Length: 574
Image (cartoon, rainbow, N blue to C red; front, side, top):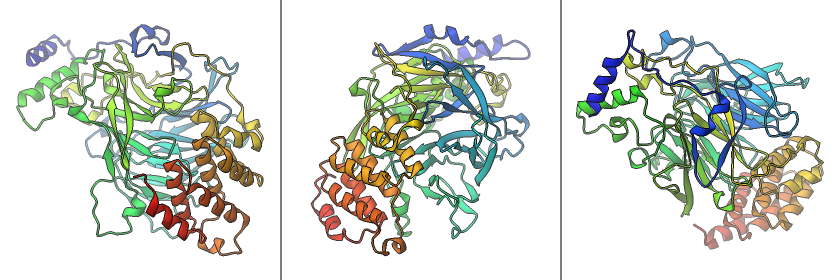
């Protein structure tokens, strides 16, 4: 039947043949296409011309939204689009857009181009009066020193990420508990050099299938390779457990840290990643959009080849997960409590959002599908291309919709079918939605840049992760001398384990960590951290005990060996 349908479709193609049949919907006409579970809804907060091709974004402390626009997907020079060929001639036309909601009504009113001429931009983190941006082959620091909404300072702090596969680039920068910036490294690899590297690091630094992290302080930025290798996705839960995704692998826990594995080069533990969820052929998805004509034709061809090794996801035009991206653990406070620690990800090729329930399983996790025979969010519109999510000040998740007719990687399509499609169609479009629960009442956006240190410390107890993470970043950023004592008090008195954990990590980030510094008459910061770690080694929450052990090791806290040994020996948590 598939072969017959494919033949009919090809026979019906006009000359020259075209498979492009769907038309884009105006932003104000998309609502009827959406199907959401549990009476959730989508609210449009920005669309073209304010934004195009959004793939990543970050709120600053006052609710302004920096959006990464990957306008150069999948290419700008079609003639060089050949498998396994580096894309050195593609024009850098990606941008960073700054969106502002002037009247705080929840919809963005204006945008400015904060930075332009970026190559394959896919990740962003806010720091002080600028942003760090992953834009292969570079890692950029972009600064707006005069606060006019445009970056006049552009510094590449690292270069050498390989510009090969447009879907396997460094992506999704993430601010971590220990006040580093972690990026998913993709699978392109590279030969890295730049001021982000420590002076003693041999250059170029060879990167293969790794993720990475670096300090916002610098140069140098103490760049390190990490376990990982995510295609497009990088998230963490409240306790610092990190998860990535890889096209057919929707949720992977980064279980074994590279810094520990590399201590013994003769030991091969296998993959440092644990597949938390079923993947590929084992994970059906339930789209409500029709499969595109080219998918039907291609699936029929592959079925006709009769190769038993061919996965079902290739021999069927729809029905299986093939393009997982944007994996995100929900950490907000606007949705019902049962949504905490649920994982959301897109199958961008199938125009849907899938979710899983995380469950601890020894040192790692397992997960299961929540929605049975349906998905959390689907659209009947083939142009709907959800690629990523971000936590917002209002406690919801924002969804980034690239809004393209075709999202497929050019290398995954037969040349004849690819020639019938315009893979750049939709480059001038893009939408951002707020995902809201029933009876949602949006709170005003705070202006944390005006908050005193005492208020920022209190915000570490806030139920919304954006508030906690932003407050912790600002405390680390500002380095107020009163901060350590306030953090020390909070971690001893707060009933909120997330607050105790943020306080511990922020105190540790402000404390000298090298043995040379710690041997100098035990400075006050080290004494406070020593006391904090001793206190939290006995914390009732296992994740706090784990982080206390990590920090004791990283800071070589000399007064702790007995307490650490006792904690390791007696702790009942796996």
